[in-house]
Image 1: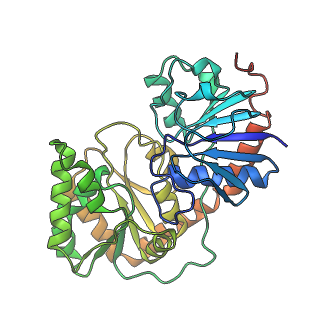
Image 2: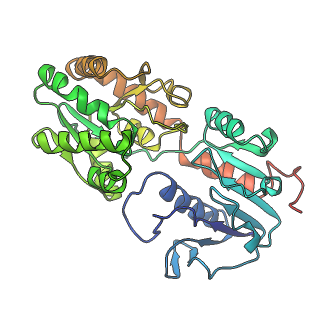
Length: 351
């Protein structure tokens, strides 16, 4: 049994007791903690909450009151507070490409990334990280026990609105001209993103204003679900026929997409932009359209998919089959091997 500490304080929204969905990082780190408990290890986690919790075998500690000594330290996204701990090995799981290194990268036994594109971007932006320090552990996906009936001509958006939702807003009138009964469910909280970004006075704020007006002007066809619980998200994924993601984020870092994996597992047809890591990760799962995003082209292709039952069914089956090849059990086994020294055993211990 190893004593493992997860430092999760970089994730401001992480509340392990809350059943709501806050992107990919927070649910993933909770799953990592519980999977290491299941593997037989003693796991403590530090977060930005104010209560001490014990959930699924994991002891969650408030910001400044936590264990200081461990066999393995897992420091999510940063090294800025590495000095608080005494440890034998150190790993840094990344959902981003710009970890806070604090000039401590030489102490790290492994930076954990999701894809080869993730690795490429990480090494390009952070030349002080050595290639041999980077290990690839792709995430898994939960597979529904059954695939329920779909809502006819239902689309789904479950990413942050800043990452391309404006293109669907601009494509919407043309799509409705072809498919008058098309609807879209949005599960990531347009109002929350608007309130966070509205004072930035930049293109993101302008696009979010456009998205917000689109939502309000189309109450019959655009369903803004706000920030949802996990059960609501799964239900929305199960109901959708098509998951369109015209991503063109203003900054680099699209190295994976958890919600695309979940939509694929739910049997949605997947349509993605050919951006950064998406073609590498989802090449056998999705259809792709080129960058820059052309809303007219997206409207036409989305209409073609929705109106062609045979194509739509084949795309959904292909996506579901792809998802079956990415179980969480493989991710858990790779992390277990890593923390037990099976992958990075030749790396020197931190000085």
